[in-house]
Length: 227
Image (cartoon, rainbow, N blue to C red; front, side, top):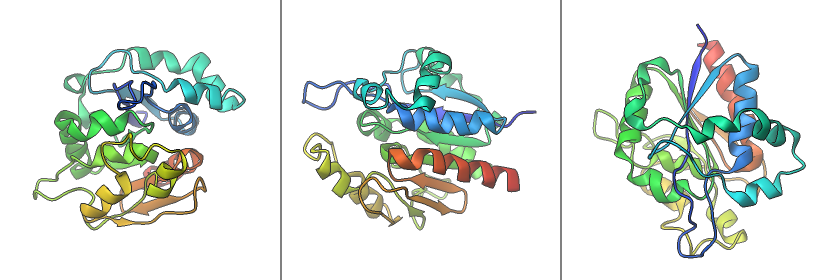
């Protein structure tokens, strides 16, 4: 039986009040998908609304020379047009829950209790929970059966406040993710802007930014195979 990965993507396509489109960020889906499928894992997708999940159009342009992303657009990306709704998911089937990034997740994942409950159930059932970049915001609403945040006491990373400032989107965000993770009791470890940074804390694996997406997935594969 193949190991199954549930990838959580955003349903949100507007970047605050900027008039710019956003969504899930291409290499943060394509690179983990490549790593997971090459390891023999099966990858399914869920989004808050289900159906067609919007890709950040800027990410397609920025990564048009990236062979992994281009291969994904030709083969795997069709799955993002028919994502499951949270109510469609049998969480007991999944050994890995992965939150993909992009600025879109900042707007819908913190408020999505359905996916948060799926994540808590999976984690407490022994699954690996992982996220990259702004995808770590998916952990913000996750509370465990003891009532505490899944983030509390964990060593964790995400897109940093410095990176947000660098891309000039601090004001467009509903809150700063690094600050929120610290407020929830996480031990935040950030690297220099856009350097690979993967943090492992038990069965929680997080990557800081787009370059960390593939390395994060590789760490997850090694964790799952060692279990």
